[in-house]
Structures are given as structure tokens and as C-alpha cells.
Image (cartoon, rainbow, N blue to C red; front, side):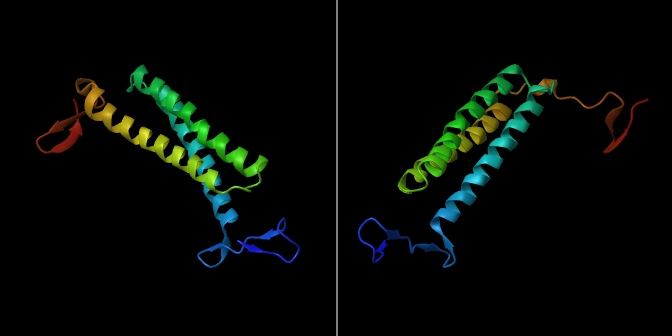
Length: 139
């Protein structure tokens, strides 16, 4: 930090990322991306909840993870809007929490698909079937 001529209380942030954007601008951009990712995961959660091919356990755990996703969102809103990005070191905790929650989404998808998903329940439509190396109509 470089101090302005006004004294110790007036600070000027000369730190730039990519030589053009201040660090506050980058934090706001990543925060908005975090909020859009949360909205996307909520939409996916709704789609999964109404999909009959998934069990209730998958949708339920997905809802729990979406609820945990609110923690980094609220952390970012608090440190960005209320605190005004005065202490940028706390933003790292919000983004780390978001990264952990996204890792949980990934791990839950992999564990469910390869471990819990009932494979015999995967069927094609009744009017489609595999016939001698090509898809053909049944009937």
C-alpha cells in the first residue's frame, strides 16, 4: 500500500491485477460469477428434483449442498457490501469455501453415478431398441 499525502488514514490502493484492473474489481467479478454459479446449481437442483430417473437421496443431498453454498455467498456479500472490501484477506475464505462446495458437487455426482445409481433402471424408450449394430424401431 502506498500512503497518500493526507496521512496514515488516507490510503491509495495501487495494486493492480493484470496491470489494468484493481483487486476490488476482480473480487467483484469473481463474486458475481459465484452468485451465477449458485443460481445455476439451484436450477439444476430443481430439474433433478422433478426428474423421475434420480432417487430422492440424490436430490436431497443436492439440496443440502445448495444450502451450504449459501455460506460463501453470504460471506462474499458481507465482506463486499457491508465491509466494503476493506480487508481483502477475508475474501480468500469465501472463495475457498465456494471451491470446497463445488468440489462436493463434483464428488457427489461421481459417487452417485458410479456407486449408488441403480444401473438396471436405465432403459431406452419402449419404441427404440438395438438391432444388429444400429438403432431401429421396435415393432
